[in-house]
Image 1 (tube, rainbow, N blue to C red):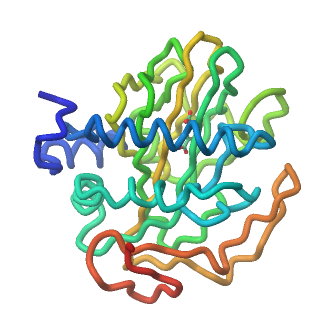
Image 2: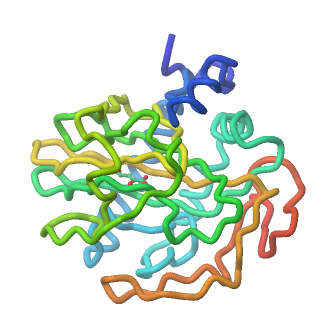
Length: 273
Ligand SMILES: O=C(O)CCC(=O)C(=O)O
């Protein structure tokens, strides 16, 4: 049965092929009810402790102080512990191989009625990873679907590689960049429907986005970003200031070895506590 925490957290050969062909896969394994309850409590805590943040924009809750706009409160160990759940690490290994680093995360918690849309975009535009081999594991913390601003993907779009982005000047969006319209067909979009604890794994070049949440139900998703440690997390990338005036800096970002023991050429790598 899909979405069963008792299942082995492996992907079948057909699921791995589908990931490479379509750019995403929804594994059969999912987080346990106990994990979900802990995630829901962590989300409520971190959102309440950070009223000056948009809850769709809590970057790196697994790091002490977060990243970009500083996060208050003592939640990082909890958010790091979710990335350390063996099932998630095993799925990361199925797609990225025997040496995997956790290098980023983000909480995209869309409140009921006022949750922001995410324009169609690809990740990785400014990520300092060479080669750009990275995978996102997006975990549903609430029931997620088209009615509450669920994640939407354009299957196969990752195969085009990096696409040009342009400024999106609309109000009330959680990102101001979008893929130029001529490069994809929005009518090909699929809605990802997940129960709490289920997750979708997707490629760094997947064109994805989500609508505003105008429903009466919160839509929280938590994403972890993984890379094989054979790729380089390039510390020399220049810092930049984002459109909200916060510093985006990768020079001292801690990396965590979540699978294997070999950080490759990467520096600042820590073992999981
Ligand atoms: O949660 C969403 O709606 C968007 C997520 C996203 O853009 C991402 O994980 O890169």
